[in-house]
Length: 390
Image: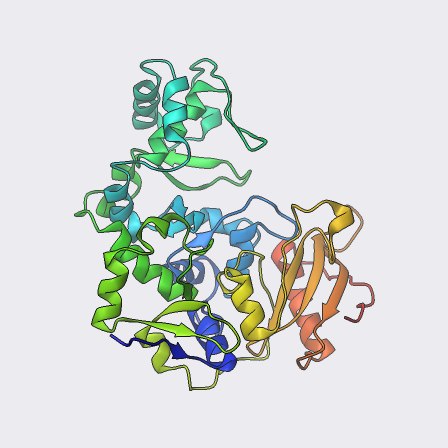
């Protein structure tokens, strides 16, 4: 095992990040089959419900797969949702690792839910899903009321049936296998929805989790951070040391900082090979895998990105929901767009800003991106006001 970290150049780090995020030249095919291949390759896509031109999973898939419509991510099939990089949609093949982990069920204030639920409700809801599923929480029978959980201002459900579903879902006794067109979770038994994976031997949650997270993130900061999320308990543990000792993983650093990251040896083998990108401008969701470690993005790309959706309006530098733009492997700008209201085009762009330090794409490439984003909403032309220079 190397004592000192390998020092990467910013360009080498860019290549590692872009390739890990599957943004070099995505070639997954079109439509839902392409989206399934994309999810299987990424291993996890972080979820967020805010929907300006698509929810977060929509945007991650739209940046890599053609022929999709907004909301298609919830119709993929062969998936489940759980905590990975926060709450994620995951391919079914990863279910055995989650079934191994939930023996202790450490997530999401489970003990608080157990205290509030009346005796018998959890099993009654389980039996209802078993006998009537798949179903949404709105299709459950009335199991009474409970005191909602107030979590830093977020109010949980007051329905006992819905809270019991949360418990069953956390323990993987039921799984979320998709969303209906209204965005509601579809619950079912794993043995029925994902039979091959629900009965497979259990897998090591942390060992397989480290492999997947390194593969999609490219670089994992040793000091921790949101990109670790559900894997945080193992960050300084023996599994990381074993991976370092075997040479499967290396510690790396960048000029101008004392911070260090973990990087898979396979990713390092290609760091000197230039990216082979296409000319497409890609709008990235704020929680796209490329943007998980924003301080690292600033070091590598010189792109200072803050997602300001939770900031008070008066404190925002850019806007409520501003997305990065990627072109030829560079973060070249940012855009504030929204789905059009009645009488407007499918997508309206309120602002664009371009970075001074990199070459900006020709206007025709931006127009192609906007047309594609418009077709993602519905098949009409996109209207955009004059772009504002950065």
